[in-house]
Image (cartoon, rainbow, N blue to C red; front, side):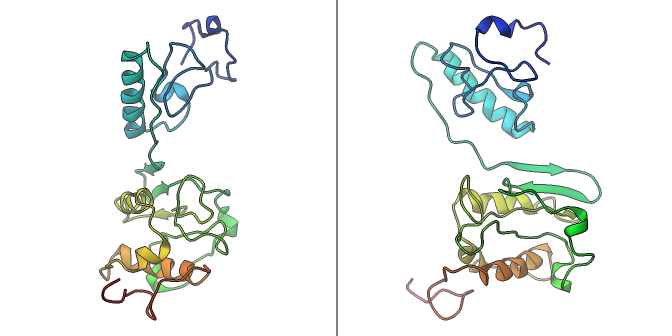
Length: 207
């Protein structure tokens, strides 16, 4: 994809694909007046990410005479429109379980969607996902009916909501979100931090 661009002339290290190292928050290559964006980076190769990268790179290219601005990147979100859908909301800190390690069937009817919430370190983390939080929310299973679910999960991640926060949101039944609530409740029981008040799903008036 980068053949013929003469990137070797930049005199910076190139990876195995011939792409130079760059700052993903400014899209600047090393300390050079060069920016990079889109699929050519080999990272986050989806349209909405490429659009953000183009805007970041374009802004800094237009202001190349001053130090580049660094922007906070959005939570990764991927959706493969196959049957069943394969979705990933945020990046797990550990590899997703192999097919042989997954249960042959959902543990309850409420989870028949296969959408799951996983914690990489349930004993120490409370937040469903963020760049470096201990507990991460991810969808690592296929689902036939949930193309909109990862959008909702990522919005919660972007707002830095905890598992306890999510449990205090309304969930309608019987829809895919009902299965999510059951999974969240299971995860909540594995965490050490608790919501205030005696009922985990309902906040006390005045809180």
